[in-house]
Length: 242
Ligand code: GDP
Image 1 (tube, rainbow, N blue to C red):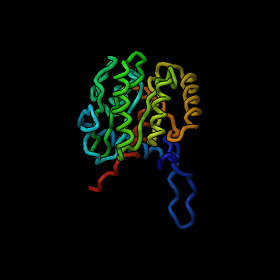
Image 2: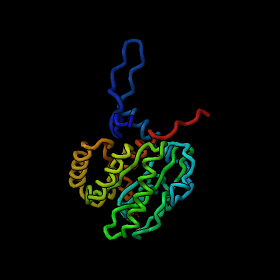
Image 3: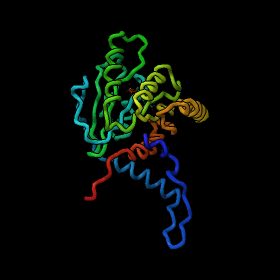
Image 4: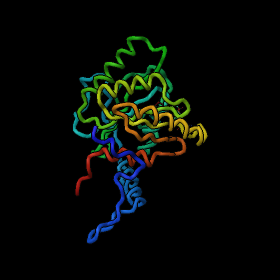
């Protein structure tokens, strides 16, 4: 819970003029450009499918920082993972409700593991399926010590729904930091997008484990992807000095 203080898209610390006898502090533009470049560099590496886990017994070793993606089915999660990593079919896109519930793990440059969590939010799903999803996802969230953050994807046309609030309740209980990212921003006007963003920021401000910064994205136009890569790169293991 130690990374609340560094919302993406904002300067990480006040920029002060250099004190006498020291180098001047980096200009905000230079700092932002360096952040974006670090994100671009990390996500330019090959992202490799590691394993699909249908139960908590078959998770890969927990030896790298992890970043998980969650959201209602059809929110655009697979498209976003593919967009971030520059791959067209790394995460399989699908409109099929009730697709196999599994956690999919991807290795990014040996520095960060991306985890694609099964989607949620089918009102008509059988109770046994919901119970299975809850056991798998809640067990993962509570037990995964290397999990640094969960990206909660929300369709920018709809804003937060009951099932998103339930997901955030689970994350608050598990004390895992999460960050809301709006998807499909190209489908609404900039004014509508700003309104949704404002509503979400206001609502999550009351939540214990929510990161305050909400990033709007479109996998179709690429909006917000560079900023999101920059933000997520701060969670990765440092580059080796070689
Ligand atoms: P998932 O079920 O959450 O993995 O969602 P998908 O990535 O499969 O996307 C669901 C549908 O939304 C697909 O038809 C995608 O083409 C579409 N989609 C996803 N992201 C975007 C986006 O940013 N803009 C638009 N216009 N459509 C999108």
